[in-house]
Image (cartoon, rainbow, N blue to C red; front, side, top):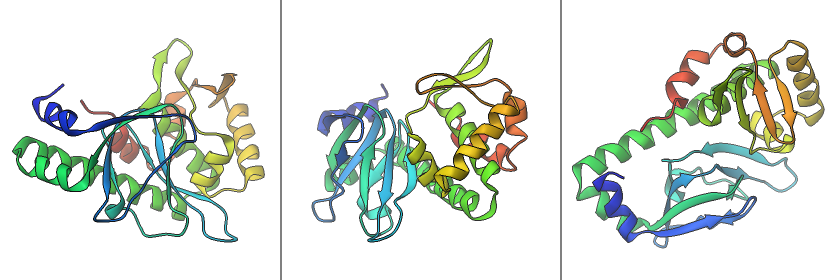
Length: 222
């Protein structure tokens, strides 16, 4: 653990969240900052009489705070699997980061990457077909969660079918048809409950026009 991380850890409260547990997204001045240590979280919005939307996914190393999230109805922060975060009061986080040049630069880079990922996701939803959206998500999850093996890239999917449909702005029936097409094309296998194998990684990259950008933004960095 880097020295700058040690300083944050000393002032943070560790929080372990179970699957589907919601974490508080307080407004200023009581705003909290979450630093993701493990697992996967999502920002969700749910306006009255409107479908739920999953707006953004957060991976280990990401920084979450209410002030940088759009002010939308029914906004929640939800753990999609067993997750561990560090929670700090926003004022403490800002003070600690400002006092350490390395931490300042690291936080700025991380937030810039998160903004770029959110912008990319908006572009994916607005411009790509359903098949291309699904391929983009599989590439993202493969990069973030996958491990290479003789059968391809494999990982346990933390999102339910409903989560995926909401994240990709697809009708669940449409998503089912897309999933069937990907299986028929040899791009996707479900080995067991929640476990996914991507047996043809290069072909999957070719199924989304934003593969290069996804690789640049979703390849985990130390």
